[in-house]
Image (cartoon, rainbow, N blue to C red):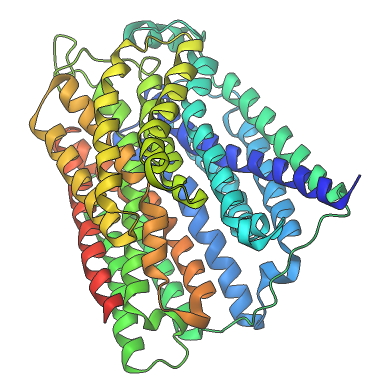
Length: 545
């Protein structure tokens, strides 16, 4: 087998790993409301699925940074990207296998067992953190550097396909192919017809795939380790700031978990969650202020566009995750006569899967459209691609749901939301700041419509959040690392840490929902989109200066 063939084999395996990330992350949208029903927990507790999963990303990236900073050498570079992916796959394998004993013998209503589920998800997420840290530069190394962005876009497209399929597959595994009412699900859970054994089998299967992928990488001896020869730059003051932030966050959530040992006080839990949010914001802003005065040992923290970008990534991941993680509760919550808070018939856990799939499908639609510019089309071809590619991706989402046996008639109207996104691409003119600003404003508008309307208009307004989040990650990254020079790599690591937003913002919305109502809790998403719009405007000025 030729070396080039081995590289293609590695890329094929690598995009499969990207698929796993999307599959598991998006399937949480179905798993969360199921856990709430099965374990009989409140909305805040259900959002701890995101807390465990996305919090693991932060801890994984932080541990690598601390070890690298302490030794003066990039740990991932020392291992090699190939080994980094293998280690990450093995850690995720352990987490997937841990799901089996975590829920073994669990009965409905045993909320204590739910925390063992969180531990298993944390381990899976920790492995994903290692994989993602290594996978992006590894993909670039598998061939011509000039075509590296093409390979990343391919991997990103596969990741988005995983986010579209994940909710559908998990719903079919949990509930079967026939949609069931809430009363039917409650009866099946209480009678044992629906149990966590299906989750055990799912995660054992996924764990087997993790192990197989790790073995393929390990035994492909001709594959490069793909190390980066650039010098690792220490930033001890930034490391200390992040450690202090981590300790304070741990204290906040210790007090939160302690509340659930007895009768939980909703106001105390909300206050601790808000404090955790303030801790992140204050740590980053104070660090940047100190770094501007004395740049020594602060590294990339001295750049305001990076620190604002860290908050933007935190906010973006938070809002992207929280819209869909709380969507299940919004659609199934019964305010009387079988009607949910937005005036539609209340849906059961098994009936929301195609809507969760459509939400994540919105991200796939936007990412496929965002990848068009990579191939440098010109003239009318470029115009037509911006119109056709989103609808091809939309067709893929509909097809996946249709062959799974779900009724997709309701989803056809989402084509109008796709048209609005296409208009946003044309107005953005491929400029990161302008595009982010436009999509941020569209995000604000969509959630406000969802809050002040009802019925299908409100539903599609919330679902379109996926469309408007779709291009934010690359836009925020491009703006944040602009002008960082030798600190670009370090700045990128700091940005990845801020996936932490997916661990804090969804639980915050969950507790607000417990107190004032699930529909009203979506004001959190409005605030997030407002900050992202502000970031685009502010950073554009900083870069020009």
